[in-house]
Image (cartoon, rainbow, N blue to C red; front, side, top):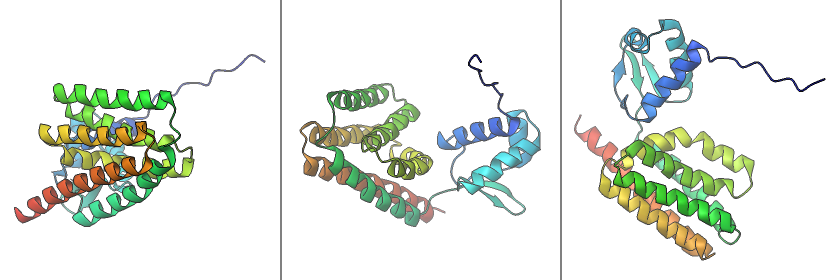
Length: 225
């Protein structure tokens, strides 16, 4: 029998609504803390309320939105406790990864990491913040992929959307984008030299700086309420 090509299936309206709403949340178009009306969201997307509600239910299970009785749906915002917990996980896992991979990266790996940081620099010059955040995320996920442990990759992958949302808060100005690149270059320097401790120290410094900035922004917003 000749090889059978699977039948392609167009995405359902619910899946399309989910993808679009998630994109709007991750890019910051729908900001944390905002309340939205389900009917108006459906009208904006050009679909009925049913697929939008189903999409919102799935997003609520992922912790990205919350239903507020009598008011609508709220785009979830992070607390300083949640930020602390996420970065604690990242320090433990990514620190372990860095120490494991520093002495065994291939020339191709080094070129790929260097290319990623170069792309970050291009996005800084163009002030393309969403694209910069995507390259930032890929920088960390690429390092995780080098360890060859699918369970570890899965844990970090499950954090990717929270990392992305936090990343938006962390680089709201060009000066922080430049600092992120410098911090990534410091991590890269340790990796390129095959120096686990140097790369580890640079990584922890990068994560701690990012956590402090995000937590400070959240605390400021809470005080200004």
